[in-house]
Length: 130
Image 1 (tube, helix red, strand yellow):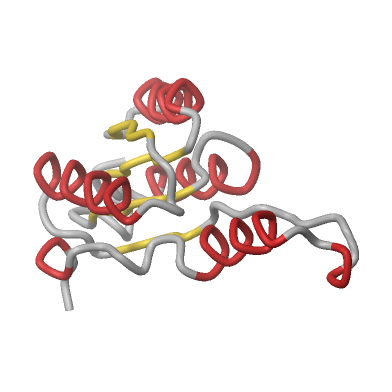
Image 2: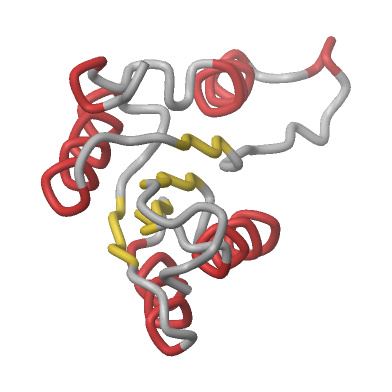
């Protein structure tokens, strides 16, 4: 994995505990990136990081909620502390509102906006390459 086209790059993947997020984290690792696998469910992030490690990649699991700016900052800082500045941010975490918009509770609407739109936008700029 060290010689892939993303060798030397650092990626943070939100929603990495399952589905598309886990697949993206593994794909980035297979291409040579060091990956911070982030998920609301820490155990799921750890499972993805373990899978990457078993495949010969390097990964860090970080739990936390993308809807909470302090958690986002902590995740980014943990990735930067371990691997260096971020090159890739894959914001895959998301929630789905299954009710009609006119009958959606305000709390549910706020959750959708916080996760899907604002999710990882509060990452500290010092931890990302420009």
